Amino acid sequence: MSSKIYSIIKGTGKYIPSTTVKNEDFLTHEFYDTYGKKSEKSNQEITEKFEDITTITERRHVSKDLVTSDIAFFAAEDIIISSKINKEELDYIIVAHNFGDVKHDNRKSDLVPSLAARVKYKLKIQNPNCIAYDLPFGCPGWLQATIQADYYIKSGDAKQILIIGADVLSRISDPYDRDSMLYADGAGAVILEGKESDTPIGILAHTTRSDTYQFSEMLYMATSFNPDSEHKDALFLKMNGRKLYQYALTTVPQAIQACLEKSKVPLGDIKKILIHQANGKMDDAILKRLYALYHIDELPENIMPMTISWLGNSSVATVPTLLDLILKDELKPHKINKGDSIVFASVGAGMNINAMVYKM
Image 1 (tube, rainbow, N blue to C red):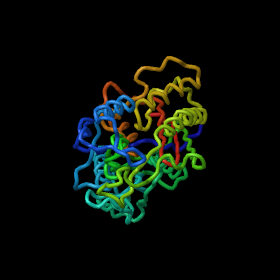
Image 2: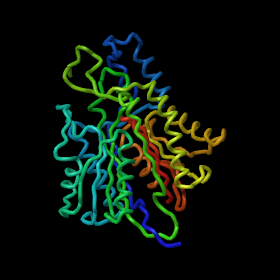
Image 3: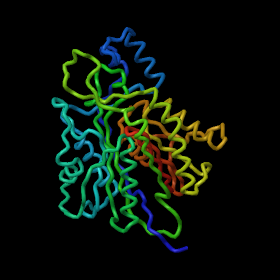
Image 4: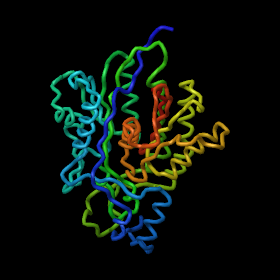
């Protein structure tokens, strides 16, 4: 067999904010419904039901002085130090995010220059041939950026690419909407590198789908549920949770199955499934639906590592952060060993879904 160029993960990095926000911190909030009416349920009942549905007990928020490009830089710095690469040899820096830099005291999105350009500047990279750009693609943005990077490497256009997923969702969530308890802040990153091999390694296959015709408005921006909100002109992230849940259960298992078939890797050979940390119960249901497609009722133990219970949903940052935690032995008992085949998958605004099969 002749050798081919494969995209492999050279290193990983992350930034987990230091501020922990627990469910009980929401007991003093005022929650409103979609009709602008104050909730009649007690906050105790709301938070208990929320935890039961999502498995989230706490999440991380950035400090007031930080914005998304700052934490993207922190994750990039972490990966450059740990992987010991020469940052001047990076061919691309791709930053996946959704809202740009949103300051604590000014909730408008700041997108010029791009966050990737800001990260490159903060890293003090002088090489003009290191191309920096952003990718907004909803929660699947980091995985889609990785898919793009794979194309660059396999085409011969690049050898090393830094891919970052970073979001500060705490600044775009409506404090009067109970869904605000879902959202968290964070950043995760990988460096993808081309490697010649006689046998398949690294990225083996990937798939992406966009169901915009029917489902584009399941995540959208709108004003606060509170008609008397102090942020009357601000736009906040809103979600049709029930429909999104059903959409994900139907389509994500199908996307993963299609990717496995494309890679020619049997489901039984998969050691870990790293899925976007959107909702604990939803991810459990997706896993069951995936194995049901193969007529398997009993799920493998520890196949799907989870962080959502203590990190919340940080959108594009959840999957790379999860990977970094495992590879650095910070999420026991989970391990990924050389030769293991793993699946990445994500779903989010668009609606967009992607999946990837990777061999360590």
